[in-house]
Length: 201
Image (cartoon, rainbow, N blue to C red; front, side, top):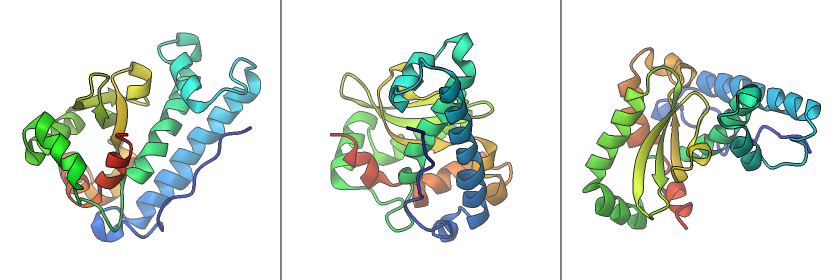
Protein backbone atom coordinates (compact mmCIF):
# COMPACT_ATOMS: atom_id res chain seq x y z
CA UNK A 1 0.00 0.00 0.00
CA UNK A 2 1.36 3.42 -0.95
CA UNK A 3 2.27 5.97 1.68
CA UNK A 4 -0.03 8.99 1.78
CA UNK A 5 0.17 12.64 2.75
CA UNK A 6 -1.91 13.04 5.92
CA UNK A 7 -4.47 15.78 6.23
CA UNK A 8 -3.44 18.60 8.53
CA UNK A 9 -5.08 18.37 11.98
CA UNK A 10 -6.22 22.01 11.60
CA UNK A 11 -7.07 24.46 8.82
CA UNK A 12 -4.17 25.84 6.78
CA UNK A 13 -4.97 29.30 8.12
CA UNK A 14 -5.33 28.21 11.75
CA UNK A 15 -1.73 28.81 12.81
CA UNK A 16 -1.47 32.26 11.19
CA UNK A 17 -2.44 34.19 14.35
CA UNK A 18 0.33 32.33 16.17
CA UNK A 19 3.19 32.96 13.74
CA UNK A 20 2.87 30.46 10.88
CA UNK A 21 1.02 31.84 7.87
CA UNK A 22 -1.28 29.97 5.49
CA UNK A 23 1.22 30.24 2.63
CA UNK A 24 3.89 28.54 4.77
CA UNK A 25 1.54 25.61 5.40
CA UNK A 26 0.46 25.43 1.76
CA UNK A 27 4.08 25.18 0.64
CA UNK A 28 5.40 23.09 3.53
CA UNK A 29 2.58 20.56 3.75
CA UNK A 30 1.16 20.64 0.24
CA UNK A 31 4.46 20.84 -1.68
CA UNK A 32 7.44 19.77 0.47
CA UNK A 33 5.81 16.97 2.47
CA UNK A 34 3.90 15.78 -0.58
CA UNK A 35 7.16 15.60 -2.53
CA UNK A 36 8.74 13.36 0.15
CA UNK A 37 5.74 11.01 0.03
CA UNK A 38 5.73 10.87 -3.77
CA UNK A 39 9.48 10.20 -3.95
CA UNK A 40 9.30 7.55 -1.21
CA UNK A 41 6.52 5.72 -3.05
CA UNK A 42 8.66 5.81 -6.19
CA UNK A 43 11.55 4.14 -4.36
CA UNK A 44 9.27 1.48 -2.84
CA UNK A 45 7.75 0.70 -6.21
CA UNK A 46 11.19 -0.08 -7.64
CA UNK A 47 12.64 -1.96 -4.66
CA UNK A 48 11.05 -5.26 -3.65
CA UNK A 49 12.95 -5.22 -0.32
CA UNK A 50 10.95 -2.15 0.72
CA UNK A 51 7.54 -3.38 -0.31
CA UNK A 52 5.18 -4.29 2.52
CA UNK A 53 7.41 -2.66 5.14
CA UNK A 54 6.18 -0.05 7.57
CA UNK A 55 7.58 3.47 7.52
CA UNK A 56 9.38 2.81 10.83
CA UNK A 57 10.99 -0.30 9.35
CA UNK A 58 12.16 1.57 6.25
CA UNK A 59 13.62 4.42 8.31
CA UNK A 60 15.58 2.00 10.50
CA UNK A 61 16.81 -0.26 7.68
CA UNK A 62 17.88 2.62 5.39
CA UNK A 63 19.68 4.74 8.01
CA UNK A 64 23.43 5.05 7.39
CA UNK A 65 23.26 2.79 4.33
CA UNK A 66 24.92 4.64 1.43
CA UNK A 67 23.04 2.62 -1.18
CA UNK A 68 19.73 3.57 0.48
CA UNK A 69 20.54 7.23 1.17
CA UNK A 70 17.85 8.46 -1.19
CA UNK A 71 15.28 6.18 0.38
CA UNK A 72 16.23 7.29 3.86
CA UNK A 73 16.00 10.98 3.02
CA UNK A 74 12.42 10.64 1.82
CA UNK A 75 11.30 8.15 4.48
CA UNK A 76 12.96 10.14 7.27
CA UNK A 77 11.35 13.37 6.20
CA UNK A 78 7.92 11.73 5.85
CA UNK A 79 8.30 10.27 9.36
CA UNK A 80 9.48 13.61 10.76
CA UNK A 81 6.54 15.50 9.34
CA UNK A 82 4.04 12.94 10.62
CA UNK A 83 5.17 14.09 14.08
CA UNK A 84 5.64 17.77 13.17
CA UNK A 85 2.05 18.60 12.19
CA UNK A 86 0.45 17.34 15.43
CA UNK A 87 3.34 18.90 17.37
CA UNK A 88 1.55 22.22 16.81
CA UNK A 89 -1.89 23.41 17.86
CA UNK A 90 -3.87 26.58 17.10
CA UNK A 91 -5.86 26.24 20.33
CA UNK A 92 -3.52 24.61 22.86
CA UNK A 93 -0.17 25.85 21.53
CA UNK A 94 2.20 26.73 24.34
CA UNK A 95 -0.02 25.28 27.07
CA UNK A 96 1.91 22.90 29.32
CA UNK A 97 -0.13 20.04 30.84
CA UNK A 98 0.58 19.02 34.44
CA UNK A 99 2.08 15.56 33.90
CA UNK A 100 4.57 16.73 31.27
CA UNK A 101 5.42 19.85 33.26
CA UNK A 102 6.22 17.73 36.32
CA UNK A 103 8.48 15.46 34.27
CA UNK A 104 10.19 18.42 32.61
CA UNK A 105 10.91 20.02 35.98
CA UNK A 106 12.29 16.70 37.25
CA UNK A 107 14.59 16.17 34.26
CA UNK A 108 15.54 19.72 33.21
CA UNK A 109 15.14 21.73 36.42
CA UNK A 110 12.39 24.02 35.09
CA UNK A 111 10.26 24.65 32.02
CA UNK A 112 12.47 27.63 31.19
CA UNK A 113 15.55 25.38 31.35
CA UNK A 114 13.88 22.92 28.98
CA UNK A 115 12.98 25.69 26.54
CA UNK A 116 16.52 27.05 26.71
CA UNK A 117 18.01 23.61 25.95
CA UNK A 118 15.54 23.02 23.12
CA UNK A 119 16.18 26.46 21.61
CA UNK A 120 19.94 25.92 21.82
CA UNK A 121 19.59 22.61 19.96
CA UNK A 122 17.24 24.04 17.31
CA UNK A 123 19.27 27.17 16.63
CA UNK A 124 22.58 25.30 16.87
CA UNK A 125 21.70 22.78 14.17
CA UNK A 126 23.84 24.01 11.29
CA UNK A 127 21.92 24.04 8.03
CA UNK A 128 18.79 21.96 7.64
CA UNK A 129 17.54 19.64 10.35
CA UNK A 130 15.39 19.13 13.41
CA UNK A 131 15.32 19.46 17.19
CA UNK A 132 13.47 17.00 19.38
CA UNK A 133 12.10 16.43 22.84
CA UNK A 134 12.70 12.73 23.46
CA UNK A 135 12.06 10.13 26.12
CA UNK A 136 15.33 8.24 26.44
CA UNK A 137 15.56 4.47 26.92
CA UNK A 138 16.48 5.24 30.55
CA UNK A 139 13.11 6.96 31.01
CA UNK A 140 14.39 10.53 31.17
CA UNK A 141 13.37 13.43 28.99
CA UNK A 142 16.12 14.84 26.81
CA UNK A 143 16.70 17.24 23.93
CA UNK A 144 18.58 16.31 20.78
CA UNK A 145 19.09 17.65 17.27
CA UNK A 146 19.55 15.87 13.96
CA UNK A 147 20.68 16.94 10.48
CA UNK A 148 18.53 16.83 7.34
CA UNK A 149 15.99 13.98 7.58
CA UNK A 150 17.57 12.08 10.47
CA UNK A 151 15.41 11.44 13.55
CA UNK A 152 15.59 9.76 16.99
CA UNK A 153 13.97 6.59 15.61
CA UNK A 154 16.92 6.15 13.25
CA UNK A 155 19.61 7.03 15.79
CA UNK A 156 18.03 5.04 18.63
CA UNK A 157 18.40 7.98 21.03
CA UNK A 158 14.87 7.68 22.32
CA UNK A 159 11.19 8.12 21.55
CA UNK A 160 10.40 11.44 19.87
CA UNK A 161 7.65 13.35 21.69
CA UNK A 162 7.91 16.73 19.99
CA UNK A 163 9.80 17.84 16.90
CA UNK A 164 10.51 21.20 15.32
CA UNK A 165 11.51 21.52 11.68
CA UNK A 166 14.36 24.01 11.24
CA UNK A 167 14.68 23.67 7.48
CA UNK A 168 14.35 27.19 6.10
CA UNK A 169 11.06 26.41 4.35
CA UNK A 170 9.51 26.06 7.81
CA UNK A 171 10.00 29.66 8.80
CA UNK A 172 11.39 31.87 6.05
CA UNK A 173 8.10 33.44 4.96
CA UNK A 174 7.25 34.30 8.57
CA UNK A 175 10.61 35.02 10.18
CA UNK A 176 13.06 35.40 7.29
CA UNK A 177 16.51 34.42 8.60
CA UNK A 178 15.57 34.83 12.29
CA UNK A 179 15.59 31.18 13.30
CA UNK A 180 15.90 31.97 17.05
CA UNK A 181 12.69 34.04 16.87
CA UNK A 182 10.91 31.23 15.01
CA UNK A 183 11.98 28.67 17.63
CA UNK A 184 11.01 30.87 20.58
CA UNK A 185 7.62 31.64 19.04
CA UNK A 186 7.13 27.94 18.30
CA UNK A 187 7.85 26.94 21.90
CA UNK A 188 5.65 29.67 23.37
CA UNK A 189 2.69 29.77 20.97
CA UNK A 190 2.62 26.71 18.69
CA UNK A 191 4.08 23.67 20.48
CA UNK A 192 1.38 21.14 21.33
CA UNK A 193 2.67 19.91 24.66
CA UNK A 194 -0.49 17.91 25.36
CA UNK A 195 0.25 15.80 22.29
CA UNK A 196 3.81 15.28 23.50
CA UNK A 197 2.45 14.19 26.88
CA UNK A 198 0.09 11.70 25.21
CA UNK A 199 3.09 10.01 23.55
CA UNK A 200 4.95 9.52 26.85
CA UNK A 201 2.92 6.42 27.67
